Image (tube, rainbow, N blue to C red; front, side, top):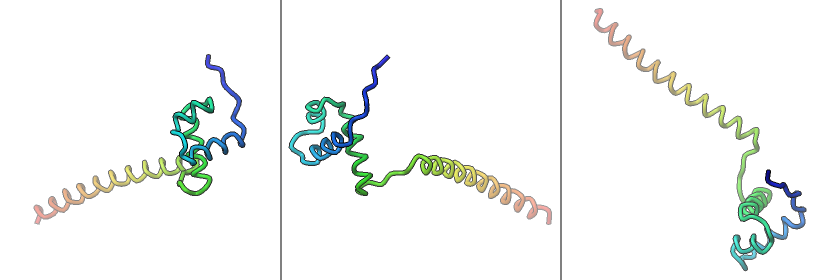
Amino acid sequence: MPRSRPAYPPEFKAEAVRLVGSGDRSLSRLAKDLGVADQTLRNGVRHAEIDAGAREALAPDERDELRQLRREVRTLRQEREILKKAAAFFAKESDGIR
C-alpha cells in the first residue's frame, strides 16, 4: 500500500508556484529539485491561477449541476425530435383522410 505524505505547507506551495512563474527552470526540473511530482506542481499552479482569477473553474456542486442539466437538455431534445416526427406523421395522415 502506498504511503501517503502529509500535505505541503502553504508557504512551500506558494514558493513553488512563484518559482514556476519565474521561468528560470522547467516545471519538471523544478519539481525534481523540490522533491515533488510533476503533476503535484502542475496542480498547485492551476489552483493558484484559479485563486488569482486568471483561470475559471467550477465548484464540485456546480459541476454536478452542469452534468445534470446537460443530461436534461439531451433528453428534452430527444423528446422534441420524437414529437416533431409524430406531428409530421399525423399531419400526413389527416391530409390523406380528406
